[in-house]
Length: 63
Image 1: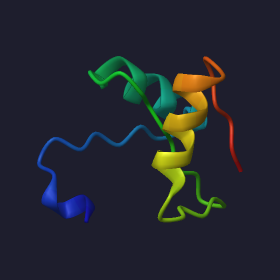
Image 2: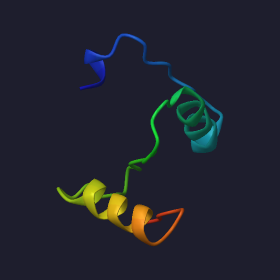
Image 3: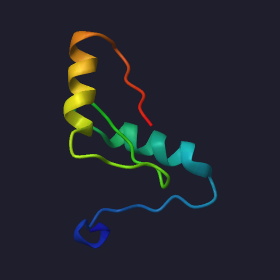
C-alpha cells in the first residue's frame, strides 16, 4: 500500500513522536487518527470515534 504513494518520507532515528508530528503538520482534515504497530483497526473504528468526538468529547483515545 505504501508504494502507491509517491510522496512518502521516512523519518529514521527520531522516534515515533517525530513521525506523528510530521503527520500532524501535513494533515489537512478535521480529524486525525494513527495506527501503531500493536493496534487493531476494526471496521467501525472511525465511526465510533466520530460519534464519541462529536457528541461527547474533544479528544478520543482508543486502544
